[in-house]
Amino acid sequence: MWIVAIIGGGVVTALIQMAIQGFPSDQVYVMRTLLLHQFVVSHGFIAVAGFIINVLYPERTAAKLDWPSGPFQIKYGFAQLGLGVMGVMAIWFQGNFWVGVLVTLYIYGLSGLWTHTQEIVRKRRETGRIEWVETANIVLDVIYHLVLTWMSLQIPGVWSFT
Image (cartoon, rainbow, N blue to C red):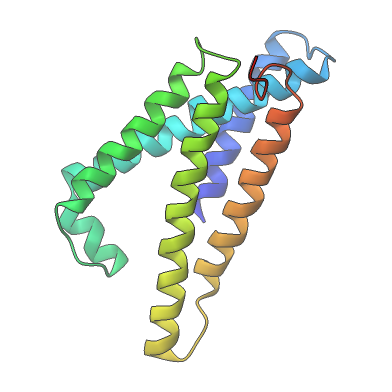
């Protein structure tokens, strides 16, 4: 599950930043740094990779997934790129803007939930077995979004609408 490595990359870069700054003990600072690095590093990488594989190599990507190829992949690749751009913009725009980034991530997560669930059902019909990788992807995605939400709730100003 490559997504664990990508999420880990965001954690590692956040830890490097905090190490350079002497590991500040302020919880809000730690949450802000961890969350920002998930937006910028993890989702930035997903955006670039998603754009490349879906826009530049759509047929190869579809074949690896055992899905049909089509123009939807181009739209999906650009949508992923937009997600990454929002993540990078979170460097300069904070506070309520981060709610917009989170909501975009939630919607992207829902698309994954939908797709992985459909794949579980399809593979169950074809093989009679449960696809544990797809199931694990769903569980990981839900946990990840819960953690991002919890971190954002620890940062004053993110969820305030005044």
